[in-house]
Amino acid sequence: MSGQSGRSARWVDVARFRKRDVRIILPLTVVAAAGSLVWVNPVFVGAWLGANIALQLISQALCRRILAHAAPGPGDERALAGFTFIETLGYGALPFALLMTGQQNATVAAMAMIGAVALSGAAELPASRRIAAAALVGIGFVAAAGLLLSPYHGAQMSVAVALIAVAAMFAHVLEADRKSVG
Image (cartoon, rainbow, N blue to C red; front, side, top):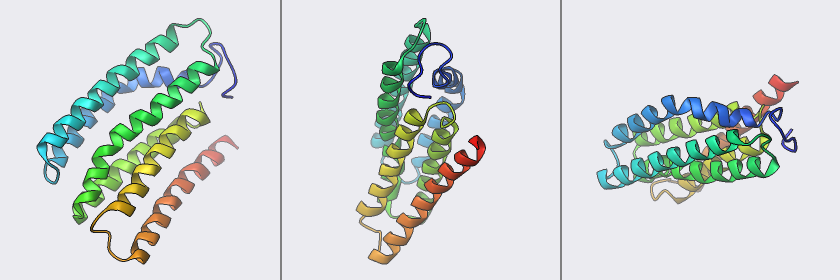
């Protein structure tokens, strides 16, 4: 799948979806920023929002460039996957900051954001395992880092159980994709 080239390559659909989905993602990003002001420093939130708007603009330009090629190839898919990883880490900075507050409601909000990114990545699995894996690995890294580095995480056993729960969520996402394909 990911080694295909030409317009028939399914991974090119990811670029098409992203061009369209920006109308939903951008407003949700603003809502996430506004909501996080309850817990996180406004300067950080403003910087996060600005960086993520910039990443969305870069994503749109990259997708336009890919779709402009007569026959996008594996290098284009790798570029989109690499950018997806960076973009996911950028987006993940806010849920990470929420986890660092140690507040229960902020943690719930952070995990909701992490889950939404995981579902978004999972939606791209049928088109490109490489691109979807970049998103899933990126947000998985954010979740694990947030749980491990939070100064308020509590006992080691509670961190281990939380990490297992996050891993189980990702395993379920991958299993749901396997069932939808097979």
